[in-house]
Image 1 (cartoon, one colour):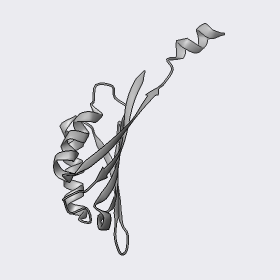
Image 2 (cartoon, rainbow, N blue to C red; image 1 turned 135 degrees about the vertical axis):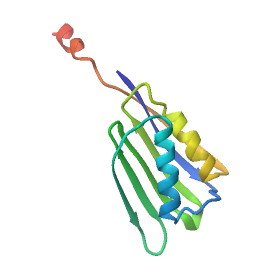
Image 3 (cartoon, one colour; image 1 turned 60 degrees about the vertical axis):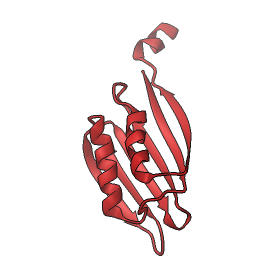
Length: 121
């Protein structure tokens, strides 16, 4: 089984990166777009700047950490459901974060199917 994991450095964001309500709404709408189920959420506001928010999903997670003073955020999207698209989640987030630049790191995870181990022995 293969799953795609995106880790994205987001620069020049023209949105309220310090606003937990804004980020929460954006994050929720992005995972709802692909049908992911939210099982928990957590956020922490840093002083004097910054915010980390995570949505724990039945399918894994969506995490955003912000540095509003630099207009920078890091976004981590991992969905353990091959039918759900990490790219669609990112597309929704990107429209709301309004970055000047985004550097996308794609991580492909492969989970071996159990019969592979039986055949190798």
